[in-house]
Length: 87
Image (cartoon, rainbow, N blue to C red):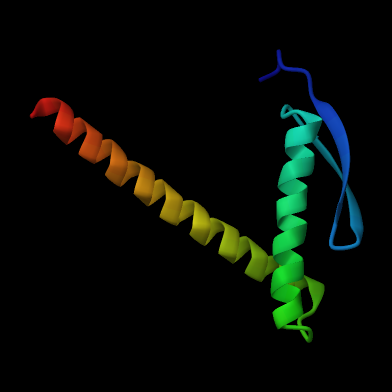
């Protein structure tokens, strides 16, 4: 990873600015930040009494849950594809 140039990208998430340092493109980082902001606003609108820390944790839980479900779906599809190849 040391051979890959890192880029700084400033993003706004839930009214706070963050500087993200990473190897992904700025457009990718902005897209990810936009999705996080959208999810935080969605959860925050349904739970207006949540403080930002709890809102961030709920957002992370939602994101990881979606990731796990998609990963399981990919694994099922890969198994199904492998099974069809051996038939």
